Length: 260
Image (cartoon, rainbow, N blue to C red; front, side, top):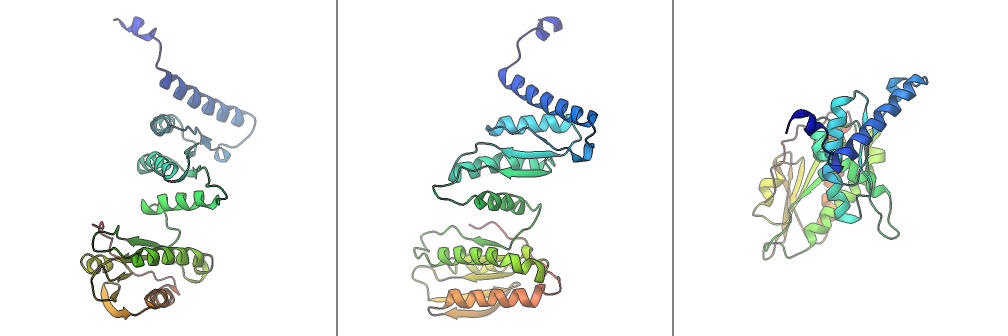
């Protein structure tokens, strides 16, 4: 087939859709500038609901435009499906340096809170190492050694507590949003993983002695016992924040290793 014949062949539907979106966005931006809107007041968005379509469209748009780009997977869905789809699409583009603002579009649970979208967006950026918003809790997945739910409850409670404190801590303790907290469920992997966080705790697993060693900046500092482990650990976290972030001098953190 010669070049002329190939050029006359119908384009695939996906290509036509992408090209129509990109052309519309660019023509609208150029028209806005002709009407007097400064280029630095323009941001382009070509949201789609398909992960691969979104990635391909923004990759092409980024190569043909110098305008800032707003990323978002529209109609992503509900719960884990929406979170996974949004993360899969945006993470690829952000890793390639594409995107200036983002939006997570989740269908809320009945009676649910739309702030979940904001939290997911922040966590995508923070787990990718692009921005920090609130101290993050790393926790093990659990296994046959962790039939108790104590470590799960503590990880959940500490993460909620840290997020709730950020409106105050953000101003009083600059840099606290980069703090890492580890909550592990047994003494097999727990101590090693805990040492790589600013503060880490290893809770007793099934059949283990009911004690919980705490590590601060890699050093074991105390062993908690009894029914008040959660409350005592929270107190240790509070004291660490006061001691290390009051003057904006964030401590050096060793990157966390993957949890087995």
